[in-house]
Image (cartoon, rainbow, N blue to C red):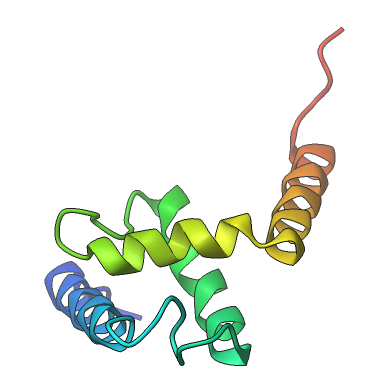
Amino acid sequence: MVLRPARQASNLAAVCGRLEDALTAGLFVCGAVSVADFAVYPHLSALRPLGLGVDPGVHPKLAAWMQRMRGLPVVARDLAYIKDAARAAFVTPRA
């Protein structure tokens, strides 16, 4: 596979722009929280550890949506579970 960072950044910007537009109508992708939000959120949240992500200056509604999603109890529990599992798998306890 050949990576093309400029093209991928352009694709990411386009996706973020479409989501920003979708969030004009409400607090979530389809107005009220729905499966669409839960389908999109993991993909966008996975960008952060890669040094990519949503720029609040460019996509303020999308950045606010990311915050709202993180604030949902089910998402917060899932993120905590993933964090704990990653620590258990990859972090060596200090002696």
